[in-house]
Picture (cartoon, helix red, strand yellow):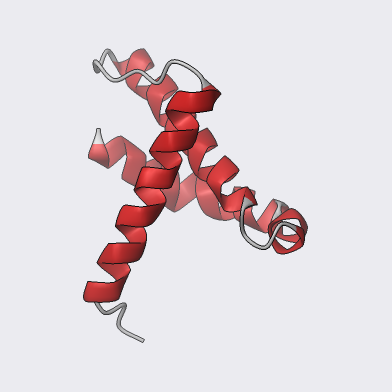
Length: 85
């Protein structure tokens, strides 16, 4: 599951972020929650196609709150792990 989510975030998310950069700036970054929720829904769909038992029922509240959790965990991990810049 983590592998699928990692691939989706590595390939699809940068493209979506580039296309929606104006909306991200306009909403002061809150649109990133929508993008993360969409990535969770896409991961759920791919997992279903591969027969992996992972399912996100709907956008709100399941994917939205999952996106908040993913964002908080990413933020905390980025505080402790240097990114190599």
